[in-house]
Length: 379
Ligand SMILES: Cc1cc2nc3c(=O)[nH]c(=O)nc-3n(C[C@H](O)[C@H](O)[C@H](O)COP(=O)(O)OP(=O)(O)OC[C@H]3O[C@@H](n4cnc5c(N)ncnc54)[C@H](O)[C@@H]3O)c2cc1C
Image (cartoon, rainbow, N blue to C red; front, side):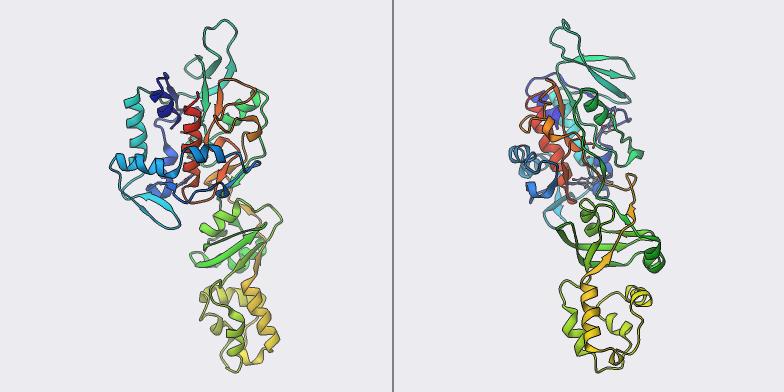
C-alpha cells in the first residue's frame, strides 16, 4: 500500500522482502479468502497505548476506498458477518491487485533480500538520509518505511527486525505479546474439559471490561473460536474469563419450572447446552441427580453459574497460533498523520509493527492499508 501510494506520487520505490514472495500473510488470511477489510471499522476496534493515534490514518483511508479498489479490479467479494468482507475466490486476488498496481506505478520489488538494520546516512551523501543494511549489501535512500509486521506466525518469516530498527534509533517499543490467540486451560480444566474438542457454543465472553458475542470452540488444550480470539487481546495472566453460556435464553426461571420433574439435571441442561459439555461440567462442578431433588435456591445458583461460567486460562498458544502481535513501536514516537518517526526524519513505521492492533474481522488489514497510505503520501 505504501509502495503504490508513494510511487503514484512519482517517488522511486524499492520493496525489500526476505521471503521468496511478498504478502504471505495475505495469502493465508481468512482461510485463503482474505478478510481484506471491515466496513464497520472505527477506532474503537483497535487496541493501542494511545487509542486516539489510529484515528487520523483511519479517517483518511476508509474501508470504502479499499472496497472501490477491489471492485475496480473486478474482484467479487461477500460479507461473511459483522461487516467482514472476504474475497469470493482467493486471497491471491488481493496480492494480485497490489502487485499489479505496484508494477503499473513502477515499484521495484526485490525478494529473497533480508534487511538486517537501518542506519543514519553520513552527512554529504546527497539526498540520502538513511542506509538500509541487507544481506545483499547496503542501500541508501531518502526514506525508509518499516512494514515488517509483528512476531506472529514465525513460520511465515515474522521476526523482531522492525522493533530492533526502532530501538537502534532510540525509539521506544512497548511490551509485545500475542493477540487474537487461542487460550489454554489450566491442568485442572484440561482434565475436566480436554475431551470436549470440537464443541462450539454461541456465548458472550467478558474480561477486563470488554465483551464479545460470538462462538467459542473447545480444543484439546483450551478454548478458541472468534469470541476467545477477540477477548484474548484484552486478557492478561491471572484474570478470569466470564462466559455467558446461554446469552439469549435466561436459564433461571426455566430451570425452576422443571423442578417438579424427575429428569436428571444433566438431561435437563442438555436441552439448552451441548450434552458433552453439560456432562463434563456436572461431573466436576455439580453432580447430577433428579432435578426434583435440588432445592429451588440451588437451581437458581446453577443457572447463574452457567450465565457466569468462570475460566482462569493458564496462558495463550503463543505466537505460533496468534493472528497478531499486540504492542510495538510506541505511537508517541510517530506522527499520526504520516507515520514518520518524530525524532528520525525519513524513517516511517506502518502496519502491525506499530502499537495499534485491531479486533478480529478485517480490522488489521484495514490498519495496514490506512497506515500504509498515510506513510506513502509522505515518504
Ligand atoms: C493466520 C493469519 C490470518 C490472518 N487473517 C487476517 C484477516 O483475514 N484479516 C485481517 O485484517 N488480518 C488478518 N491477519 C492479520 C494480518 O495478516 C496482519 O495484521 C497484517 O498482515 C499486517 O501487515 P503488515 O504489512 O504490517 O505485516 P506483514 O503482513 O506481516 O508483512 C511483513 C512483511 O515483512 C517481511 N519481513 C519481515 N522481516 C523482514 C526482513 N528482515 N527483511 C525483509 N523483509 C522482512 C515479511 O516477510 C512480510 O512479508 C491474519 C494473520 C494471520 C497470522
